[in-house]
Each structure stands twice: as structure tokens, then as C-alpha cells.
Image (tube, rainbow, N blue to C red; front, side, top):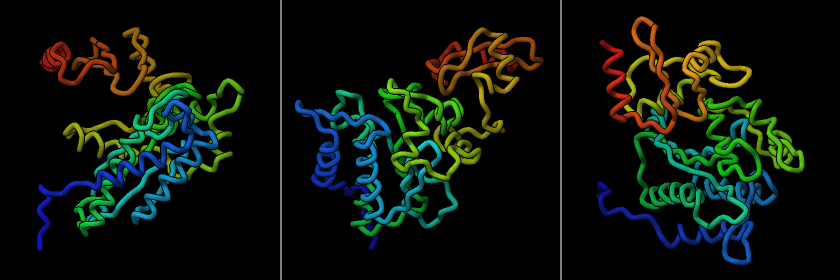
Length: 267
């Protein structure tokens, strides 16, 4: 018998109960949550979410910056996973849902698929990122930034809070330094292909700013006066290499001026 997926709905009560249970960890008097990254409370939250994932039959992997990846196998595990997720650290006066909903909604999808006995073709992976809020350590979006190679693992490890405690030290203290290298070349290429339809050849990941920056990107920054601040910073180079133009992360791929310049450089 084939399940009509158009009629499938997640278990809203179960999702709500999970959100409320997680919100108890670091709960504040006014109904919010204070669960800063890499604190004992963050460890409790991580432990709880990962246990739920294991209870749902998912495998768990932690990378070297403490990002968590929870995977449900598919029929063809050689396929790139369908990914979703967010973060479970909060601001000092955070709410119950920011970030947490993105993670637990993904987990609830897996639970619902399990309830219905549905096997997907590709695996499903739910992720949570370390220090996404950036309330305790700078830079913000740290785990995803290391994964995407916006900055190095060593740069993230060296960041300290106002008490002088380092990211690496706190990851070690709460037991969340994994063995997996963040963001392999294949993972990044698969993400770009599946998300943006990228089919052209891609360069391998590299460092684009700071002391360890690739000389090519260092020269581009010097020529344009524009250094990458975050993901999707763009440099356009014309065919003979005589012109270089930079666009910030805020410039969308479909931006009219960007597309016009690409057409101009391709002539």
C-alpha cells in the first residue's frame, strides 16, 4: 500500500511538547530562555536533542567545532542528504522558538516518517550549529562559518568570552569536540549543486581572509578594497583578468546590476 504523502501531517502536539521540554533548560522568569553556547546549560540542551535523535533511530556525528549532525538513513545513502536545521543556543534574553524550532521541526519530520514507516530515497540530516547567536563568543554564526570555511577552525578555537575562556577549552570541557572535519569539499559542492543548481567547476575550499588567507584572495581584496565579511562575498573577474569587481554578501545572485556585470565580463 502506497502512502499518500499529500495527506501527511507532523504530530504538532509532540513537536510542541519537545519545544517546551527543551525550553525548560535555561528557562527565565519571564518565560524566555538563557542558554548561552558551550555552557553547562548548552550541554544539557545538546544532550537532550541528541538523545531524541538516537531514540528516533538517527546516527549522530559531531564535528571539530561542535556542530551536531543527526542522520536518518535512506534507500540510497550515497546520495547527498536532504538537510534542515538551525541552532539551539540562545541570546541572554532569548525565546523558546528562535533556532530551536528549526532543529526540532526537522526532528519531528523524521519521527513522523518513522511513525508511517516511510523510507526516503536519500538520507535526511538535521543539524545544529555551534555559537550561532554569538552572544558569548565572536564571531557570530561560528559553527556554520567554520563549516563553510568563512574562517578557520583555529580562528574559532582562539575566540574567548569576557572571562577569558576559549571556545576550544569550553568545547573540551563539555565534551563536544568531535572528530569530523567541518565541511568537506564534496559536502560543499553537493550543497551548492542541490541548493543553487551549480554545475560549473568549483575551486576547493580555502581561507579567504586574515593572516592565513589564500594569496589569490588576498590580492583580490587589495585590488578591490573589499574583504569578505561573510559567506557569498563575490569577486567578478573579466576574461583577460584586467578588471575585478567585488560584491558583498548582501548582493543576491539575481541582483540586476550583478547579472549585468556578468554579461558584460563574458563578452
